[in-house]
Length: 490
Image (cartoon, rainbow, N blue to C red; front, side, top):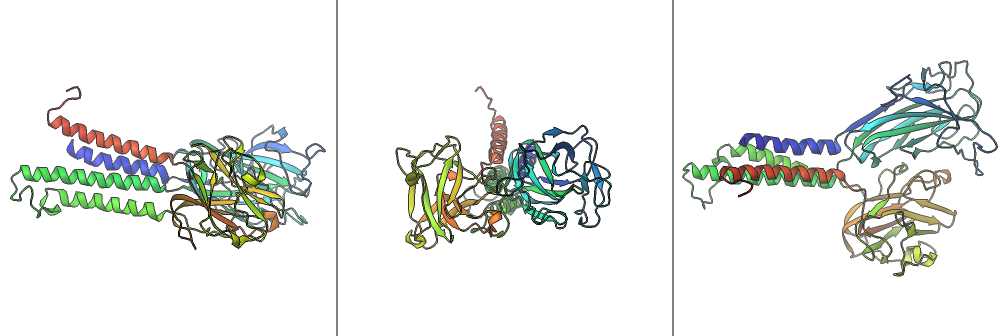
């Protein structure tokens, strides 16, 4: 029993930790007739342009309904050969169409319109964040949605010589970072909307890889649990050593790991595991500022209030935008903006803060404002109003005009540069003030600030590990009390 508890509890902690962040998900597009999972695409139907459902909006950008207006009579899809203007399929994948005779050398000419494909996959690790990327090609172009949220927007059609001028298209692989994307516990749905704009062959090609994100809090908890087990093991073995008549005195300072029966190797293993896990929990912090310059963030970067107002504070960091920008925080839960006024006034003067123009240097680093109107648990959307372009850009791709998150955020503890303001358990936020159509550089440093009283996406794995650790400790204590002749109702 003694050895069983000592071996099972670390195994439980490690196995739950692996479930929390070690899952890999790989999707490769291919055709099929059933079991449309893990990249095998199901054909859903089409939306052909009509006066009431045009393919383009007033700005000339493609706009597709989220579901087809005409459902398919068959879900079957087919692998088709790349040739001519179609670049060879991504490694491990196939070009896919709704007809076996599609493709550059095929006999099928698709009408202009939108063609819908879908595949599902399972995230066995539960609701959590994942890092990875998705690569896509399409003729003419495509939009990709994950659980109803756009993660890859349509490319710019342009002259449409063979396929769209902008990626995704048929001549170049478009790879988009999906770092920090939130998946559902269980089934997730990836939808590809293939746009045909030139009365030619239509098809799509896709691969994706996602790995569950290590959670610093989970790693910290795991490391702490292992250290606790090491201390328990040390005390139990020390007591065993003394009870067997060892020559060391109970108060002797000469007691060492090697003098404890069986303690040396076990404790060293526990200590090494704890040290590695604890160091990993600190090494996992994201970089500041954003390092993947040029790569748009396609996942939701909303925050969650951990405190109720007026304990939410925003601290100015810096600004480098050329346009006139203002920052706002929209409380998705209440449907109102956070306010600088204690009466929750919704005027522009009270809901906008840290405007970077006309004197971007006039706000000193570390300057703070208090925000009112939020309650603990509220979901908060980060907004930026670019008055030069007229766009409101947000941390939610579904509410931004280009399907991109315009906020990069990560946990921050430290001193704000060029100030003496020290922050503990804050969130650093970097905003991008131009859309993809406006040739954004996606460096996410146009307006930077730090918020307190908020957190990034909650980590469900932390509670799982905590519960497992407490259960293990309870088993150890139960056995110890049982050995002393105690019973639960004594």
